Length: 193
Image (tube, rainbow, N blue to C red; front, side, top):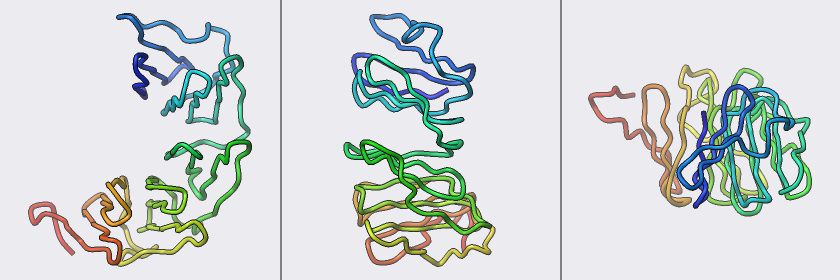
C-alpha cells in the first residue's frame, strides 16, 4: 500500500490494481472500476489531478481523462521533482523528461539498484546491493566510496536536505555525505567499520 497526500485528497494504491482517493471523510474507488491498472503498484505520485503516476509492476499515467500504460519494467523505487521522474529498474535508471522515458544508465550487473534520492536533475544518488553507491552530477555517474561493489553492504535508503547534507543507510551502517567526503556515522551500538 502506498499513500500520497495531495491536499485535500489522499490517494492510496496497492495490491489488486486498485487506486482509491480519500476526500470529504470517505474512501472511493478512483476513476471507476474498469481502468487499465493490472498488477501491484507500490507508489503513487500525484503532481496534480491531471498528472498522476502509479509505479510498481509497470507504470501507469493519468492525464485527467485517460489512463495509459508505459512499457517500462518493474519499478524498484523512484524520485521525482517538478521537471522529471527518475525510476530504478533494478539494473538501471530511467528518467521521464516530460514526454518520454529515457535510459540514463545501467549499473554493474552484480548489483541491484534499490534506492534513489536527489535535490535536482543534476544531483542524484543511487544505492543498492553489493555496496552500490553512485552519484550523478547531470553528466557523469561516479562511484562513491568507501563501499565497493564486492561488499556485502546493501544501501536501503538515501535522504537529505541539500547536496552537502545527504544520509545513506545500509543494513548495518549509516553514512553521511558533506559535499566532499563520505563518512561512516554509525552509532556505536549499531556497529562500526
